[in-house]
Image 1 (cartoon, rainbow, N blue to C red):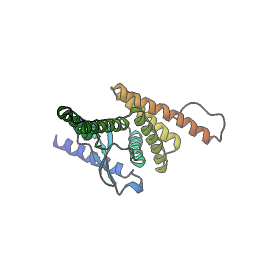
Image 2: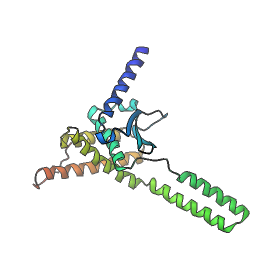
Image 3: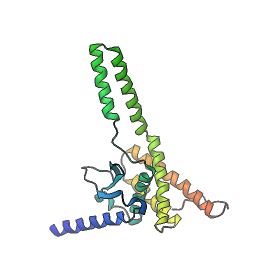
Image 4: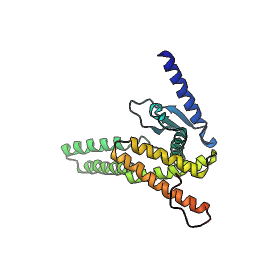
Length: 218
């Protein structure tokens, strides 16, 4: 048992080192890659640790279920989020909403109209910011943009364009099959649809404007 645990830990460290080597050179000084430590972490996510410091976190138990090329493109998708500055952040909105609600209730009790209006204004503004930050349409658009970044990074690391599309497309198909939550699965489906359209356009451009083959590149 000890030997198995040791070999697993070595494999995990080796995979983290491999992923760190896949960071574009301009990110290597301020982006780190670590194993996720939460109880039920997502497959891959990013966290801003401080000013100019980002950590990409991997659930290595789930990660090993993907083929090597799929891992690479999923990793570069997350790198794309970092490059696009669309990684999730711990916002002040929830705290402000709680303060605003508490203040509104308190001012109803003491009947101070001005402070009540200020508390309600704080509630409205923080609620609007929360909605904007968690807007599912915006989240899908940001994910599609990160997919485009992932394809571009893959070509920098030696992938041909068709193989980059194929690897990311197959990774998204696997995520669709493995995701039970409908909302999250729908997001993956939308990303896959957008990726197919992007692959078709790339194929058309490669053919110099000839009549495109409408089949995707994967």
